[in-house]
Image: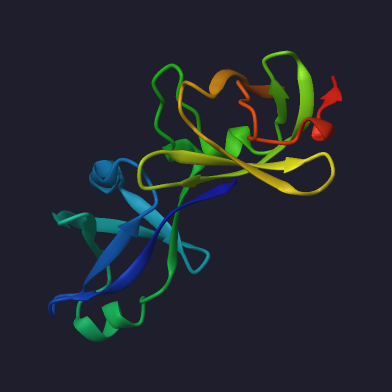
Length: 170
């Protein structure tokens, strides 16, 4: 079963074994809905979750003191596919968009979605152009016009966003 990266343990909290987890999810309360997480290639049950600013503070079963919690610092935490949330219509998991063709509203293919990063104001689509160079397109409705899972993401391009020479007929 595929594991999905959801956060990173950043530090120990207090003396009872709690750890602070930086969330890669746009919904930090997600940790409170989970019964377990994976790290070190093993499943670890969650005993308690609370929140401190934008971080989840988690107590795992079997982690009983600060020394044990400190040993978990810098570990990535994962969920499995069965723990994925059902998304609202029009929202997608990044993993489902990576590798899709990037096409213009005219139907011209100009590359593939390489990654999507979370910016301060909006997501940024990283597009590997047909010539191997990269283009970056803000993930806003003005530019992202349609997503057809398994096939493409359609973008409204504006002058200067990418050079016309990189467009190929699809």
